Image 1 (cartoon, helix red, strand yellow):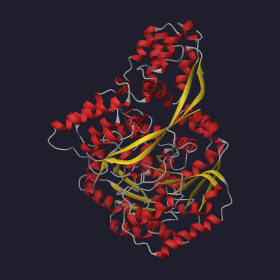
Image 2 (cartoon, helix red, strand yellow):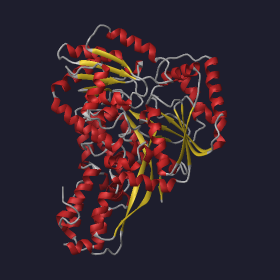
Image 3 (cartoon, one colour):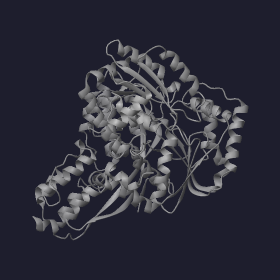
Image 4 (cartoon, chains in turn yellow, green):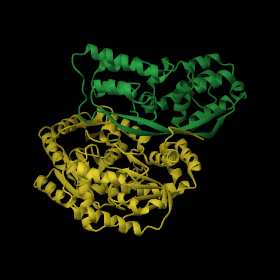
Length: 407
Length: 229
């Protein structure tokens, strides 16, 4: 596990010492995170890194992962899809099971805290049982809830109302709620296995093991096999590009224990790619961080053609590696990619194909955009920024009605 | 000049740090008429966020437009002429937010009057209104002379630069930043003070402002706190 001082050469000494000074104002307080999976997905990745760093800073921080049966995760995945705008029917049985699993998990808790951050809808209802255990409860929503299905949002809203505050990844996800809403952009860890610098030898070894030849430029999308990430649209875009420019497509996706739909979509993608020697579809285990790192560093162009996206950490990862990124103009991708500066935003498979061709034919432009993208991430989307935001939030919640607190 | 670098100040400069949390207020603006309405109605803290505090939130690596309204007009509405007008307007020319609000309203009203249609943003590119809560703490970093000041500038976060160099002008209701005020009242260096006050804050990001300040001090006092870049 990385030591906080190891971040100083990357973000600057001043950023690390600032975190220490901020912690002096905050501590001693007990901080608890609750989410639904220890591995796989952006939330677990952030918590795996942030929790030890918060403890190193001197803030007593505990991470609780809720447990659930397959039916529970089917329900919460459907809830996730509904919050991102899909029409999903919820039966009384589904709702009751969701509530009961939350109650069971709440009964297993033995902590007391000053500040609890509950991530996403899965464990949201635990507040019902645990409210007196902590002074401040904050709901952290990582999902694109800009146009949620009304039935599910009404249900969740009644739960979220009990919290003292909510945190969203983008301003467009803010909702009508009777408490303060804050913005925290997700972040990546530059020292994690997924983002650390790799040697050319390490990259070559991964490509060889995965059977990827570097005989043509590589176009890459890394994401879960999820309809909202539009892997079929990426294949369509790739085939449009290949009519003009030789290249190959790698679609690499991890699995998360709370995503039962992944296998079905993976099969659909395999079917679409079947028989095409220039398309490789890789189902990687949730801990394949090193492989993903190598793939991103080996790629010539990285795509994240999402049609809904909370924030798009794979975009941040690619930008940090100095790569030009083409992203769907949704959610947090819009914040990260600025046309011709840090990447390209696209609205269709055709647009995606057009920008891939542009970048493959303009390597000098691709390099310049990649460099600007890396600096943009350094300033705004590294884990040190999230630590700072957590600490600031803890201070603000003592006096949420005040817009300025001075020490 | 070495002597001047070590000459003790009457009052030390105490750096403060500024931790800002953006707070979305759930209001979305999709066209220019809506923007006019929102600017008339929202709390002053919302205008303040989009004119000033946005610097400390996420700002693009290259500063093209100096505030969110100009940026949105230029990039989302693609109304470059309006973006130019909103960029040229300087909120620091006014003494209170009521006057600033009226100035923006006047610009947009005039533009709408002369435009045959209401400019719209594409879906996904709406302006989402925010305000912010801020924690300000004493950083424990202080400067008792110009050498320490120069070194401290390199050691504080960019939020400190924002607080003392940008926000101070509004906070103190005077177009003067904290840094040049401290140098003016502690040292006899009128040329340096004038040079610092000549920095156009709207065309640099906070990192660039920090470097420009360091370069100016080095240019006036020699290279004793490091080589200018």
